[in-house]
Structure formats: structure tokens, C-alpha cells
Image 1: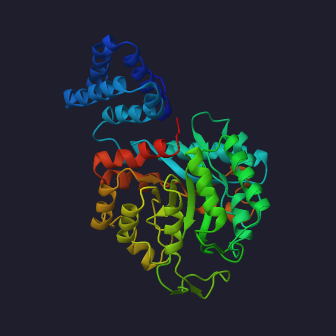
Image 2 (image 1 turned 180 degrees about the vertical axis):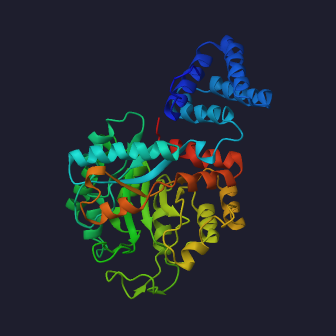
Image 3 (image 1 turned 90 degrees about the horizontal axis):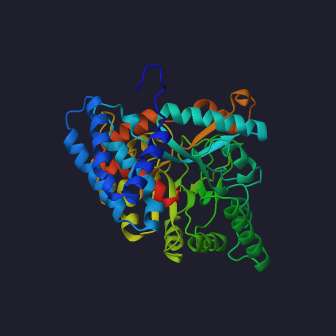
Length: 423
């Protein structure tokens, strides 16, 4: 790098690697020249295992060349990330591993605030080592905003964002009919039309959809509860399967009757929580082609979302995915106990087995709320959450460093690229 030249961003490096892969596909005779250039770069960086890394990069080039046009179009970013991994110094900080954050929110009240929040989110990504972020509206029981409110703000930052929709529309319809075991044909048509409209706007899927959402932040934070096999959720699964897009769900699992824990002080919560797992499994079984991403893995608010339960459900349901939250959801003893990381920075044995047995089924979702710097003191729950929850780049890096490299690479970015079709 010449003196005074700014280092490339992760997104620029990924795009350069994609161009290299395209060149190898278009002219297979260029492979020796490509590897020679890579050898020079690795040597200039002082790496001692250059030939080992070049062998791995050569295999990635061969894999790219052997792919069909469709497969390459779908997987080129994954391949580029693997090349980037091989070119990363062994002593690089954990946060240098590029990762995709699949679960985030913008806290804003209008177009200008959404623009400011999106810019702030890019700054957070750059600091935390995230290459891309998926923004979604939080799950609302009364409509406030959906993806159409922030889509234009995201478009000002090409390549850094994707988005989901439905938290401020589809979720509202689900919550408003939560106590009904059937819905009218007109409601089904209205629901399906809205879902199709969200996808036409460019959404990568649906979310955040609340199946069971505890009220965690006082009276202004609603308690949301609906049977997972509610007719509109089953309909949404069919729509998602038809379009091959995922559904991001918030589901505080209850496996047996649970009196409200003492730390859960919000008055909106019931005195007793009742089992809801069987209905969730019926949703998963309803349409096996519907990909359900269960948000906030490792962030257990009830004491029932254990590594053992995760392993059982992932084994039984091939369409179940989990987004890993980089920190426990609260400071309760149960939440900390079931978080995958030990205090010494290692992965707990029971969670390591889950990650190793199902390396293709986890992504990372920090559940960050980001607001515009000019609106952070404007009041309201989203603004207060944005003020106290920095993006967990260091925690993500620690988790990835503790995992086997092949598993870390998948969970960091490759699975997200595939699940949300980020190319």
C-alpha cells in the first residue's frame, strides 16, 4: 500500500476478490498469474505460511471455475469471503473476521432521522468489523412503521444493507387476531397481498415476527403472544416457502408452566407463562420448505432455551435456523447460565457440540437499535435502547475466535449470504 493511501474496506476487498474469481472463470489460463499476485501480497504482509494459504486459495479458484453460472452467482460472495480469510494475518484481531449482522433495527420518527440512523449504523459496522447489516422493523402490536419507511435511507449506502419487512404490518395483523383459531378469507387475502408487496419492495424475507415476546422494558414495551400454528403464521410460512425467503421470529420458548420470574417486572406480562413449544414445532412441520430463523439464540429469558433443546430441534427440523446474539439478553442468573460463552472466552462444551453438528444453521444477529445522533435524546423506547446497546463487534469476534475456523467462517457470513440470498 502506497504512503498515504487509505486501506480498503472489507466491502472493497470482497468486491476485489469477486472480480478475481470472475477473471479465473473467464480465463482459466490466468490462474498462475492470479496466484503469483497473491503470493506477492502475502509475502509483503510477512506471512510465514504463504504456500499453505495459496493452496487453499487455489482450491477456491478451482471450485469457482467448476460451478454453474447460477451456483456461482449465488455463492460468489461466500467464495470471496473464504479468499479474504486466507489472506487475513494469523495475528489479526478477532473482529477482523468479516461478519454479517442479520438482525437490527433503526430507531427514528421520519425520513431524515432514518437517514441519520442508517449512516450511524454504517459507522457502527465499520467499527465492529461487520460487512453487512439486515434491518427490520421491530414486532409491533400497533402499526408505527414498516420497511417502506427506511428503505430509501438504506439505499444511500450500496452494498451495506439488506432488509426484512412485516414487523409493522404483518405482525400487527397476527397480534390483532391472536385469540382467533381461524380468520376470514378477506383477512387472508389482505395479509397475503401485504406480504407480496413487501417482497416486491426488495425485502430479503419477513421479520421481525413475534410469536412470544416478553415485555422487558416497562409498560411501554408490549407483551405479544400468539400460537405459532396460528392460521396467519401458517400462511406466512407458505408465502415464504413459495418465494424461498426466511421468516425471522422472536420466540421466548416455554416448555412447561413457568411463574413469572421475579426479575421480570413489567406489568404487561402474565402471572404464569404456558407451554408453547408444540405449536412452534407444528409451524416448522407445516411447510418444510419455509425457512424459520429463530432470533436471539444464546439469549435465554425463560431458562428453557438450552443447548440441549436447540440440538433436538435442529435435528428434527431441517428448516430451522438460529441467529446467535453476541451477549445474554439480561443479567439474570438463568440468562448468563445459558449463554454459549464461558467467562474465560471459551465456548461451553454443550454449545460447541451444537455449532459443530449444525454449522450451516447459525447466523449472527446483534439486535442493535441505532438512531441518528441528532435524535438519541428524543425519548421513547427505541431511542433509549439505541443509547445503551452498542454493536457487539468485540463479543462477536470473541465468539468467532473461540470456534473452529471452518465453523466460524460459516456462522460469521457464509450462512447469512445463503439464507438471505444477499448476492
